[in-house]
Structures are given as C-alpha cells and as structure tokens.
Image (cartoon, rainbow, N blue to C red; front, side, top):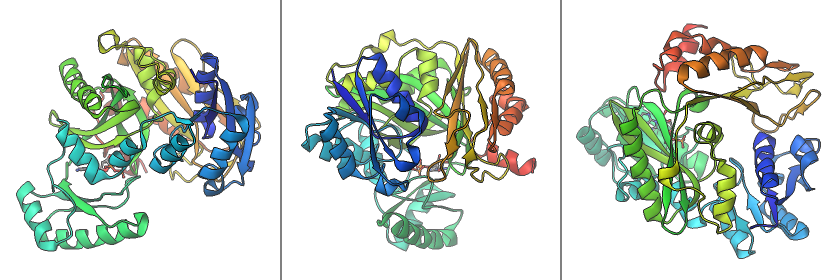
Length: 447
Ligand code: ADP
C-alpha cells in the first residue's frame, strides 16, 4: 500500500479523497494555489504545498510544480480527482517516468478515450453499442451528405477532440449538413487545435445513462450499475439518480455486463464511466470518462462501496475488493449539485458564505469543503457542495430529499438550492419522466 498520497485537486473532491486516504491509514499531501490557502482540505491534510497563484494553469495544471511537490514530500502516489489533470495522459506518463503512481488508468487508455473517434472505434470493437454514424473523421461535403442520407436525418456533427458539449452541430437536412460541417470544423479547430469531426445520428429525446465500471488492470472488470444524469443544463449535469427510473433489472444487468466485459478485455485499470444515450430501449455509447466522477457518490450510496478506497487499492496493486456477484444494489439515491450561482440565470455568485448549515439524519450525506465564513474564490468552478440522499425506494428518497432541502441554509451568496426545491415538487420528476431536454424546457416555461 502507498505511504503517502498527494491530492492534485481542490474543493469538495480534494476533501473526499483526503477522507478516503485517512481511512486507509495513508498520509496525505495537498497542493493548493494561493487562493485556496484556507480551504478545509488544506487544514486537514498532513502536509500542504503552495504551488502557485490562483489561475489554474499556474497552479492546479502546472505539472512541473506538482511533480516537484511529490519529490519534496516523498509522496508515492497522486490522486487527480476530476477535472484539472485527471484525464491528461501526459501527466500520467510523466508520473510513471518518476516512479510515482497515478491513481487512474494508463496514459494509453486515457489517450484512446480522449479522442472520440478512436474511443468510438474501440467501444465498437469491444462489443459496446454505438450511435450509428461515420466510421471515422469526415472532411468532404459529398461524403458527409452521403453518410447523413444513409443514417437518416437529423444528424449531429461532433468534434473528435470535443469536450464540455462544445463543437457540436445538428443538421436536419442536406443544406444544413454543408454549413454544419464547416462551422463544426472551424469551431473545433479554434477550440481544441484539432478540426477532425465525425457524424452520427441525432437522437431527439434520449436519456443520459452512464455505467460505473472498475478494472483491476489484469483482465478483471466489474460494473456497479448505472446513473441517470438526464437533468442537464448546457450539457452540465444538475441532478443525478441511481438507479435510473427508466431501466429495469434485466436492462441494467445486460448493459452492465457488456461494459464489465469490455473493461476486462481492454485490461483497464481503476474507475471509469461509460456514457450512453438511451432511447426506446436502446443504448448508444457516446464517450468514456477515465476518472472518478462528481456523481460517484450515488453509486456509493446504493452499493455501499467506497469508490475512492477501491481506486487506491487497485492502483497500489491490491486488486478489486469485490466480485461482480457480491455487488448488491440497495434502494435509491439522488445527488443535487449545489452551485454558488443565481438559480435562474446560472451566473456564478462568488463571495463570502456568511452562514452554512447542512441537513442531517438517516440517509443524508453532504460532500462540501465550505464552512461559515468561507470566501468562494472567483477563479474556479461554482460547485460548493453535493447533497446526496439515500432511501429504501425512490419515493422515500424523494421525501427525504424534500425535507433535507428545507434544512439546508447557505447565506451570503446565491445558490441553486431554490431550483432543487422546485424540482423535488414537480410531477414529471416525481414520475421519473424526463429526458436530456426536460430541464431546459422547464426553465424556459417557468421563466
Ligand atoms: P462532451 O464530451 O462535449 O460532453 P458528449 O459526446 O458526451 O460530448 O455529448 C454531450 C451531450 O451532447 C450529450 O449528453 C447529449 O446531450 C448531446 N449529444 C451528443 N451526441 C448526441 C447524439 N448523437 N444525439 C443527441 N444528442 C447528442
């Protein structure tokens, strides 16, 4: 097992990882920017190293500084959390070259999944169902029209290097395709420095369903069920649930087994998420995230498995602590992402939290690094906490969530809490009846 883990992240996830390391008896080092000197995880860590000024590129994305912090403190492993360097293959390679363990998959696996054309090709080869579309990059107008006609309109043109929902264009007819191809290519080139785009069928009203997987790096793979993350705004997840209200056990086991087998075949190591669009009973692969996700907590709630413990175990060569047949899904869990944002306009609301009171009681978990008097720096994302609620069934979970939201107090900044109070009382949400467009439509209707 590792002696000392360096946490290369900030905010709630840095605290989350610190807690797991402490429970495993491993010493912790955190790196932080000058803006985060007073953060909770910095106070709780065994050691901390300031690695630079507030802008991420000078601190949390500064690979040299992070490697130097490992050398100085003698850390033998790095947990990257999510965001920042979590899916940076070069970072994983550099750590390996310094004999420091990256708690995550190999640089090669990160690279494959980071290129969407390559990822889709790999998924298909591994037996994962994909969205019908072009086999690779498309550059030529004629070819684009031919492929679009073959798969049928509407189609979507997507950047191979894309991320965060950028570089995508929908085309509903032949004229659209020509302009969509040009704009998608120039946008992708400008945003990602790579103008490769591909075409796939555009699904009109899918749900976003993702499968949590784990590989031991030696040919074993398991799945921990799915999460439904259809409630999104501008492709950002807002509310997540496990299990999905739309799937039955047979579908869960079928897609789960496909994913677990694929991960085993790939020789993948650590945690990952295989994301699908789901429509009319069919799953369509869109991408794989080769890291821990924000919403991993709801999987923990329904399985009782600590995903960060498991990541650390696998990375240290200890293998998986559980076999597929030992995984049990119990009850229902929902996560609300509480952002310091205006609940109507979603404009970030940095500032000082004058009062912070979190709900408690059975089935409630709050993952947050903030406290009364905490000043939210304006440099990073606006997530200030996650409310995770577990119940024996979905109804109990929703009732518990409603009362937990009533107890939650955040004063001094605007938050998205009012949005969740609205959602928890909505009839479509109560029925689990929503797709990836539901939230934006709802927001437009209630404006
Ligand atoms: P990114 O990495 O930029 O988030 P994804 O491939 O994960 O890109 O897609 C992001 C979102 O775009 C999806 O959650 C979905 O809302 C939409 N999308 C992507 N592909 C399709 C498709 N074929 N049909 C309909 N919507 C799509």
